[in-house]
Picture (cartoon, rainbow, N blue to C red):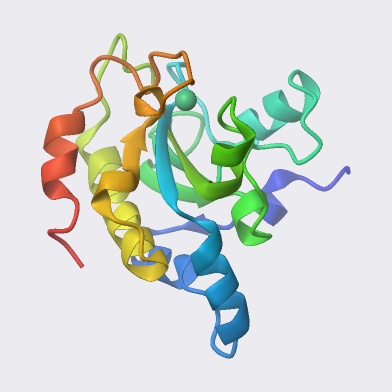
Amino acid sequence: MRSSVSSRCAVLLLAGVAAAVIPPRGADSARSKRNARWRYIVIHHSATRQGNARLMDKYHKNTKRMANGLAYHFVINNGTAGRRDGEVEVGRRWEEQLAGGHVRQKWLNESGIGICLVGNFNRTSPTRAQMKSLEKLVNRLCSTYGIPPGCVKGHKDFDGERTVCPGKNFPMAEFRRQIGKQS
Ligand SMILES: [Zn+2]
């Protein structure tokens, strides 16, 4: 496919995240199907200093040979590669409700919503704006899809994944305390 990812990746301001997450009106049967599908949220880092959804899509398509491109459902930017700090991008796999390609195990790609924060959190930490956006997005997804906070984990916290993602500096304990606090 030649179409550029910008036409497929809706770029959202924080205020717009809710609109993208909640299925459209009249999609009740779709909604119950979706609710059955998404049972986990998997948090990743890009392990790169900079990036955005378009660049990762290119990499996943051309280098990783993934037909559906961008392996994650959402990307949260860090103010590099022309994106604002904390800006959330919605990938085509989310728009089309496709399985992710962000983990080794098939069952988890099929049941886990993949969110990638741009940055290498073995070297640096996520920005405040990234963490704010992540909290807001995760809270919204959890309430929409009935995902309990215990099913929101870093990539490395899933058995059988063999990775250090999302990096040793990702503030998981602090993040866990924030989940469920906001609406
Ligand atoms: Zn990962």
